[in-house]
Length: 488
Image 1 (tube, rainbow, N blue to C red):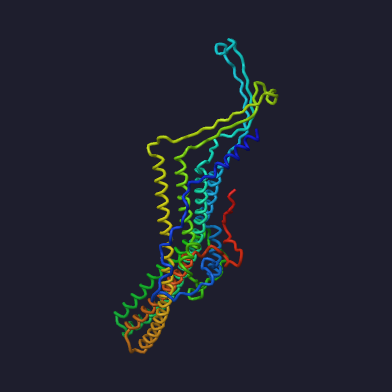
Image 2 (spheres, rainbow, N blue to C red):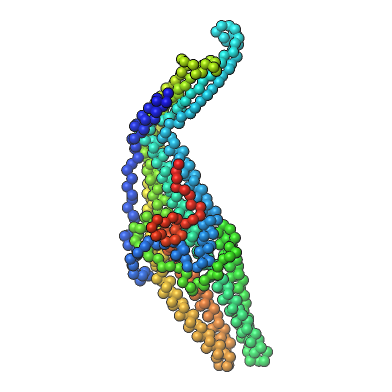
């Protein structure tokens, strides 16, 4: 009994070596070999290490931000769902792969039946019994043309795509937490600036009101001072709202409340980020998880073509069993009670109204869609990195100019205030200097935020954010909900 089942399994392995999956050829990258060059870009520099391998603890210098990223990796619900999706894809692959092997079942049955006399061969009513014990293989398909193996390959590539989707989710999470934190800090700085400016405007209003009472300042001067105060109060309410909303957004990304022991934050003007080497566009093909995800999905579609092709050919299913049977329970294991069944089934498609051809056409179309999605993922990655490189140089120039503009406005404000106090200029010049300085300081904070956000987005575009520490030899990914790669 056991020898026949083993022979059946060996035969299946021998016959199951054929595959109709088309040979996979990686599509050519539809982007230039170099990133753009021009006035908006810094000169290309050689990269000693890929940006994707730079750990986020090395890239982000702010201890508070580091703690928030670690908290989000442990609690964020989107990342948790991505990890669970991998478990689901792994289970689906195991289910599909199990079809490559025969399923052996143990069976034991017992039947007792009363037969009426008019149905009995003897004409008398009686009770019949039947008992059996055995092992069986039920409807096992011999994978002669690789249909089952193609479906198994498709499930495996889908699992690999899920792994890359999880990496992409984590990389995006790290960048989103960093951008949310930087926005929060920028709005807090803007709130503090507005509070200080409002105090200065209120002091100016108080002095102008006293001057108006003694006839030195006109009613127009007093009205202009009030407009500056009320304008600053509008900004104060705006930034109070934004700071509260920024904190709520950060809590959502973390998946839990802000840590109570959060370290003191660094100002935006501090050295908060490491500089990134962009490398070459070809490196994106191996570093960006969304590109790798698109390629695995393309390979899965390619494997489906093999399954659709195999459906045109005959399929053979085997049902077999061996055991012992007897009318008496005590006679199950006596000599001569052995029984066996071998039932092969051959299914040959003859007419299906074009269903199989349509299924094959659909599989080929899905592969073409996969190629287009893969190429679009490469183009998107190239565009994001190029934008980040353009932002790097232009924001550096813009921040330098904006800093000089703030310094010039501070000199203007000091001179206007001195000339107003000694009666040389009117209040209008002084108020104009206050407003311009406030506006320039606001722009400097927002420009610095934009520059930091662009660097974070460049880090994400280059595939950074997967490692916690920069790899030195054998390095494991960031701790958190990292799924096991075991498939069985």
